[in-house]
Length: 166
Image (cartoon, rainbow, N blue to C red; front, side):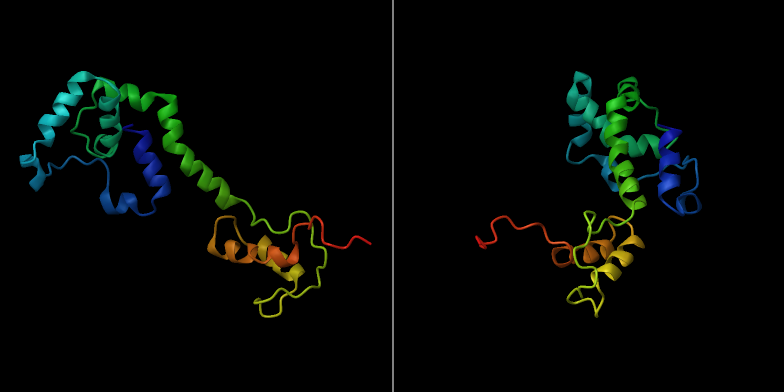
């Protein structure tokens, strides 16, 4: 956690190092440390059980352990953080986002029946030009989503039973 998480943040959060620097060794005080609502005592009771809820507390404190060098990481939390399934769940959304953002905007993958058809509300673009626009975009972007709306005109799904029995 101490090495991997800061690298993850530095890689995916531009400007992180300039803004915050590493390591965080400054002692911080905040109003909640007085524990007027008894959270600290309740957390200690839960922690003593060393069960699934205790493991959840580790996940909640991940940022604290990763960012503040003066906080020792308990053995249970080290077990949680080194568990492959925990890391998979932590990293999978970022990996999926990266994959989506590196692939070309999909548009009429099965072909365009009439490439010269002018798609409505596109300022006169033909379906062929709309597809060319899509190839310059990346999946997951707002522009890709707008372009993909034209698929209903440019490559409509085959209609079953169109009423023509002759």
